[in-house]
Length: 203
Image (tube, rainbow, N blue to C red; front, side, top):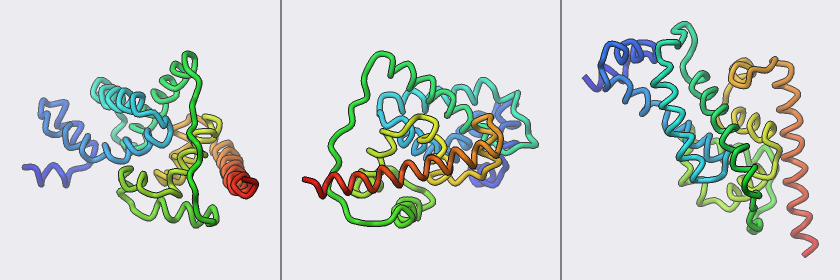
């Protein structure tokens, strides 16, 4: 039966769950938990917030399963829930605490494209492996200092590989805005990346 569930579409699994088969919902969670957790780690950069939003996202999926449009893919819908809850959690936290960014570790001189290829080469993208890389640590620091809307779009595009259309749906903005915002985000990241190297040279 487990194998059968793994071969089913998201819509079929949600239908089964609405009929009372809890294992179907567990399969959906298993299917998307790794990617969703990684997205939240990159976007929020705070473990306590990640854990809360991660649980809240799947709870929202659980309570809203009957409103899911079966003609649309589940993954963008799930990330829409996560992105909205993450932004709410971040704003709430920022009202009560200042963001603290650690000092940037030593790193190697690589281009922006090389860096992206390095951290997105593994489709499973386990964050435990990401943390082992000094380059990836630098990436996390730079992302954490970016404005929320830019960090969000670059995380969706490069770390989760959503299309322009999917990002437009997740963020509820026009595709044109997605493209311009992503362009701005990449430019900001590249600038901060080069600046961090310059700061080290000045030491």
